[in-house]
Length: 171
Image (cartoon, rainbow, N blue to C red; front, side, top):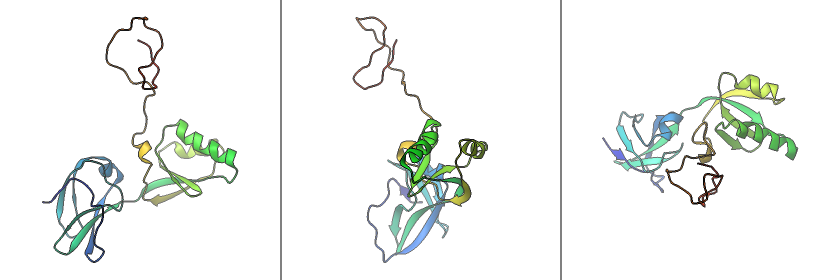
């Protein structure tokens, strides 16, 4: 079983192309197993997560490419008017949802109450199956703006301050 540690940067177009289908969840992990369409099994121990379209192995006249499986998404058109486009983007950013920004539209993974929330905000949407590739900045569904620092003392007491990393907090 081939062990894949990274994607191949450049691949020969002359090789027979076979696919390894994977869902978005598998592609976010660094360690997983998958099978190609020809039955070849692969183990993945990656330095960086893979993306849809990554070539991961070449050999015996074949190259193996990752094909992300489509999933249910909601598609929200981006308004032409800049202020409304900004408000649309803010709506999703405020919910800390992973999004994929495409020309003229935002894709978001379908969640049970999201249709109603988008409609209540005055936006239109359509549902479809698509390969959803959120921005690398959206790898987690939520985050904290305040990270807990290691325990330490300050000569000036326990007021609000930062440690040069731009993250304000107090002890």
